[in-house]
Length: 111
Image (cartoon, rainbow, N blue to C red; front, side):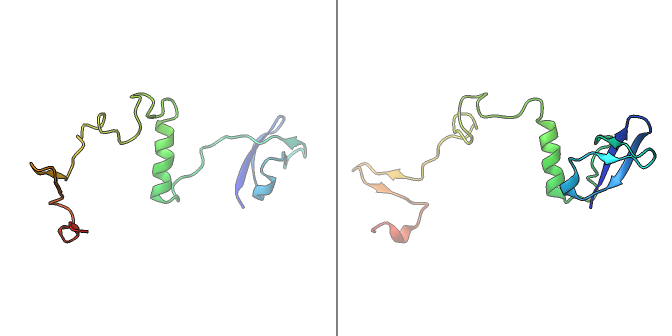
């Protein structure tokens, strides 16, 4: 079960161990017994997270103000005119109009 932070109007902040199903419900103040709304007082701990998840969180945090989109250039991802790579063709055209694929599977040319 995770810990949740609550803030009592009269007594101040406190932490309570509760099931996740009850995370949206107010907590009972241990000092005065009044209901206290949930408060977000500290950053969630990421020290025990695996590297891929931590990297994903960092990427989301960097892009929260200005996410990278393909709409800026007007072309989709991997566009050959924007990526700087020309479209390469492995087809060799002979003077008589026939095609050859020298870098592809040479044993399948006749099929």
